[in-house]
Image 1 (spheres, rainbow, N blue to C red):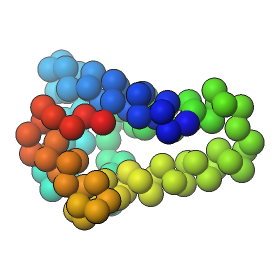
Image 2 (cartoon, rainbow, N blue to C red):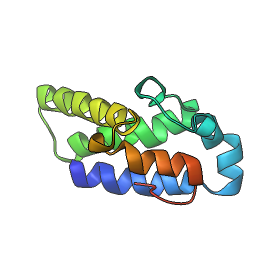
Image 3 (cartoon, helix red, strand yellow):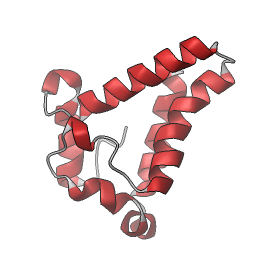
Length: 108
């Protein structure tokens, strides 16, 4: 599931930075130049479903995961997303903060 979500998120996130898609959909998420954990899932509904829910759900679906395992995976994924938007470098937020400042790097 980890490989699936990394692959899915990188490529859908990169696609969200295409100029027309960015203006219509992804710009909403980038309103936060210094993201916080609360704003981690602040996104256009299309981006939320395709990029976030799709990536998190695809791994357990492909692996035919037990529902409890899938729910645990969903919780870990949400905590990871909050961590990358937390402002703490130890949780990976430094790279994601850089992405929100520069827009053209650290898509994954």
